[in-house]
Length: 278
Image 1 (cartoon, rainbow, N blue to C red):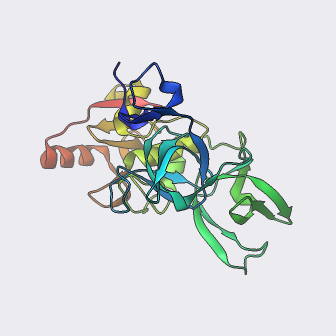
Image 2 (tube, rainbow, N blue to C red; image 1 turned 45 degrees about the vertical axis):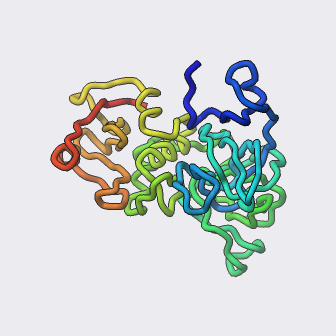
């Protein structure tokens, strides 16, 4: 049976117990539920700090761990399903379910319920918070300090309605391969974060996203639609302009779609593979 190794918690010597009888492995185990205790943490291809970053965990996101060795935990991100290695020091045992998510593009928490106390973070859009206290305008997060409550939204409430408006808030953010945080993110991470903020599910990589959404014609493109190339994606701001995290500018930029398409064609010989509506 074929499977996608990016989103399947299995290797020849070890696999999640839920895959027993589905995929062969030397042993099967039940994952230990951990959460990201840092503002963000890299999910890497190999258990080494210099290994390629494939994805990121944001604060409060669950990581299902099958093995910890040499300072790295191997497991799977529950939110987008990505498998890889995370530094064990960035993880903590999972506790109660999240009560809030971060709605600001980025914010600090504080050691005390005061903006004059030591700042922690910054934390990024869509981070998950478990409330364990409140004082005035501050909400105490388990393991994360005191957040200004206007930067948070209760789980399942106050979603954004326009993913393109979310993406526009990232203009100027640096391009970062495998990134999902507001301090740096890649093309598919940008699209994923915008749809998460709108309460929408979204896979992690461009090919997964392209397969997940319905096709539209180039002539019918409108705000919020997606344009795909092999290995790249951007979101339309209107019928003519594209916003995308790109390695050409090494930032999130807004450009005419025709200019982007011509540049990619001239430099790499690639044309758009499809137009999609999430």
